[in-house]
Image (cartoon, rainbow, N blue to C red):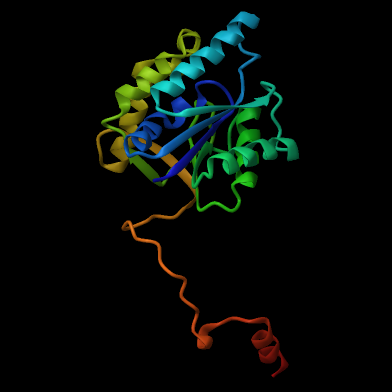
Length: 233
């Protein structure tokens, strides 16, 4: 079972970038958590609208079978400082995540850049860190694709929970979402896909039982003393 953490700057970012992949993880029995760093406070509307966006995000998380965490950051002010890195580190520790999804680093929205950079620092010891595309992403060259043909309708349902965003953004329209998935599917030679640019991606070819550690043979062991001896000669 994988322990998946998806990190996004605002409500609906994660659903747009990797919502169908999270559904696939949930269907496989993986534990899925969404960390939304801000509440979208600087979006259109008053305080009531902000509360509404949070409720929409909660509904979307339920649709994806995911647990929801809030990062407590202020919309449009996210920077990759120690405090922001610590928020992501706590989420990684709390969920024991071994797969992390986050924004692509090259993005025209400052919050997306900040969240991507902070997450890369927080996940520096993890073996699976993948970047998803946002509408504001600038450079994106994916090499990893997930077949989401069976989960695209679920992604649309999760995005549909964000009614306030769907009404204001053409990028959340179902036609645009489906077209994007079909584009990446064609690139991957499958039906519909979500695309990722991994920083690191370790692939397990077969499920294996836990193994006892095996000592490295002395002939291949790299030790400080051996290194010093070699340099002495």
